Image 1: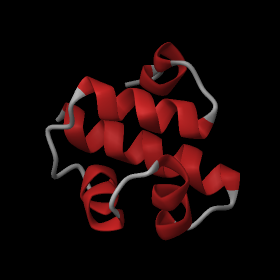
Image 2: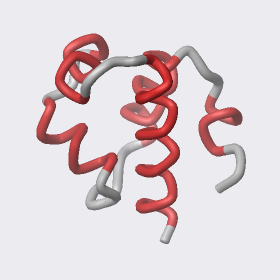
Image 3: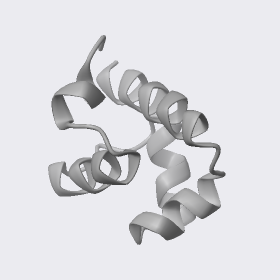
Length: 68
C-alpha cells in the first residue's frame, strides 16, 4: 500500500536527520500526531503536506518517492 510505503520512507529519512517525530513536526509546522499517523501509513496525505515534509527533509519530491 502506497501510504504505508511512503510513511516508511519518510520515517527512514527523518531518522537520518536525528530528529524525533515531535521535533521534526515542529520544524515543518505540522501537528505531531498527524505526522505520526503519516509515518504509520494511516493517512491519505495531501500533496501540499508531502511537499512540506520533503522540504523539511531537504529532499526533492522525486527523491522522497524513490524506491516506492
